[in-house]
Amino acid sequence: MKKLRLRSLLILSIFLGLCFSPVLYSQTIGAYWPDDNWRVSTPEEQGVDSQTLLDMFKDIQSSNLDFHSILIIRNGYLITEAYWTPYHKETTHNIKSASKSVISALTGIAIKKKYIKTLEQKVSEFFPEYANEPQKKDITLRNMLTMTGGISWNENAKENPFDLENWKRLPMSDKPGERFVYNTMMPHMMSAILTKTSGMSTRDFANDNLFKPIGIKNFQWKKDDIGYYYGGAELFLTPRDMARFGFLFLNKGLWNGQQIIPVDWVEESTTAKIDVPPGLSYAYWWWIPAKGYMAWGFGGQYIIVRPDLNLVVVITANGADKINLYKDFMESFLEKNIFKAVKGYKPLPSNSLACQFLKEHLQKLENPEAVPIPTMPKTASKISGRNYILEQNKMNLKSFALTFKNTNECFWKLNMGKDIINFQVSLDGKYRITNTGLSLGGNPEENQSACKGYWKSDSIFVIEHHMIGDPTKQIFELKFAGNKVAIGLSTFGFETNILTSGTMEK
Image (tube, rainbow, N blue to C red; front, top):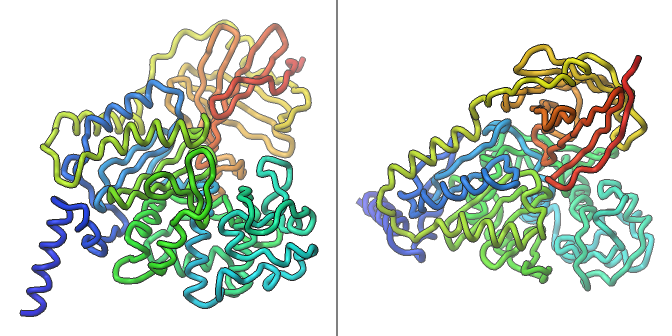
């Protein structure tokens, strides 16, 4: 009888939380955990407007924003799952600096397991060899977590954040704890500390204590020359697994009856500690906007958690944060589209027409139709199969040849010094995948590239090149004139700059 009464109360609390009151949403915690799949719902069933989401995707299509995926989870339901070709739900993405939030979570777990005693411990306790200045001896773990370590640092300079020798080489610019300076070397040092204190690699520690318990199976992680896994970037996750991590935090570290991350660490690590213009705050390797918190990686890799809306949003992209970073993307895009679509806590009236249009639109993003191929210009036959020797350039491209065998695709044979790759390039608007056998910055296991091309004019051939799983898309413009070629390159949608030039081999 007691069990029956408890079950009835649980069902009632879940129903009330979903349909009526935001206060009762906390009672849904622990009610559902995704296994290999998420439970799926229409947006309206979860109080979200399909038409607003459909309008957002149409706006994206007409913009220069280059998304790879958008996932929206509300009340534990996957209400939107969008992938832009050549990406799909099994693709692992380099989440760049969003990896820092994972390291933050691992730090909380390490404290729970007593590998780390307190955040007031000093880095010099773990690695005294790096404390070659008096003030460096005072850098605490809390200073690292809040990016107030005080070491002189420019994130965009030539120093390698994954070379801990920089800890010794670089001077102090501030007293520890005084000033926020974004520094990827800080979470990398924490990765080294986790490895030293636990006796396990950061990868194994994460797998045993975080990833495996919440069902993350398919991930990759790069490591430095010493063997420490990168603490601040280069973790590859699928968008669904990014959503798992966000959902874990939404549920205050609880997963299927197991407290993976201590509740107090979830709250402490996502509570603002220091203001960072424009309009943001920073916690323990989490960014804190006006509401909620987010993991944020270069190029537009986001795990956004909004407890007030019972919402998790995952985004992977190429340059979706390039314009004034936070202000334009977070405020304009998210607020006016995704957050605006959330209309309340009660289900909305069914909108089957908008849901159907949204479903069809998302299917076309992942599986677009082939486009008609215009007549090839005379230049195509003149250059087909001919080798071009290139001038010295920053990408170390030595030579290339374009071969047009049929009207649907061509081959781009690229000499990159020690390696020669024959990329398939579509001409019908649908990407062709090439297994390169190289880690070009994309998925380190698959090593795949996707290319499509088109004639911009009778003398300019454009190739769009994705390193699968990496935020960067490269657009090459090959301008032919006589026996000469000039190659322009743009990334993240910025202006095309001349990369190099070359001459047709006789």
